[in-house]
Length: 120
Image 1 (tube, one colour):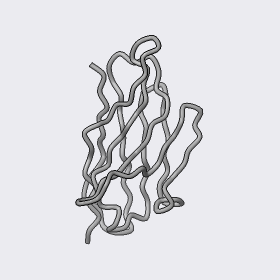
Image 2 (cartoon, rainbow, N blue to C red):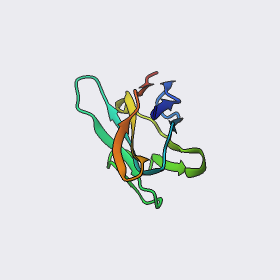
Image 3 (tube, rainbow, N blue to C red):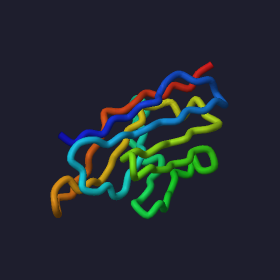
Image 4 (cartoon, rainbow, N blue to C red):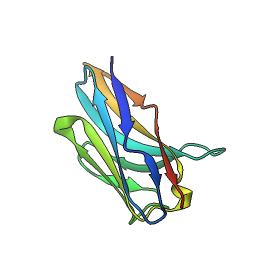
């Protein structure tokens, strides 16, 4: 059973930092692009940051300069370092990974999300 599990969410004051982790487990041949998304109440899920298997990254304009995505291929983990957090960053954060789980079989997997709340 292939799984993605997010962790690291919580309640933080504005200006604070959090580091989210996304861990892939199960029978995995390779992990291609991985993205972090967030979904605020009443809003659509949006891409926050993405990293491909070569390490190239891209970010939503709203988080550029504040968030950093990175990956540890040996551990099947992807991180999202979030600094200078703002109340508008409050959302459930999801990890999505495109993974090869059998020879030639590639599909997208989602985690169940971790809640990030920015409030004083």
